[in-house]
Image (cartoon, rainbow, N blue to C red; front, top):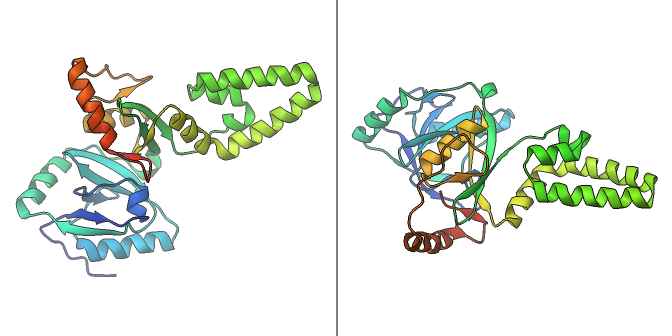
Length: 261
């Protein structure tokens, strides 16, 4: 382990290697690594790499605080990022440190892991990156909670048809569907969002779904959510919206199915 030597700079992502862990976290060039486990991180690239390697070796998790477009957000990480880095200058570092001092921080066990998916019209689905027991116990309840109404409608209709044919077929189908929904629930949610034209946008950690919405709204002022306590964003006239839509289409990376926020 390198010495506990502080510097007068932070590290900033320069390039992200294809297939790297940072790529899977949907980090971007110019994202600034601000803190690890809520501690302002000015120890340099070498020590960061060593600490994150040990994190993976010990099968541990950590909170990585990132600054993007003057907005702080947290990500839960489990290993080395695989990036090339630049450094911030003294003035940037001091300004970020001053802003970070007013950020509300949480312990690891207080945060939930979320995945954001969006379409070109900035409509978002936010999925909690954990398994819900309701998906295995009672799939209709899980689908209702996930607000996938059209899938729920299809599920109930198929269940009704099986029940009309044979009660044992219905019970077998229910059990198999429950097991499948529990094991594959995250992939199912992602697939449902993709069918609605959404692609992966970012990962973040927040205390609640409402907080996740707030962070995304700060990063994308025109973001829209189906169910949210936030007010709807201001909608511009159709001509501007058409231009924006074309730009958004250019910003979607089809190879990785990721959208830029």
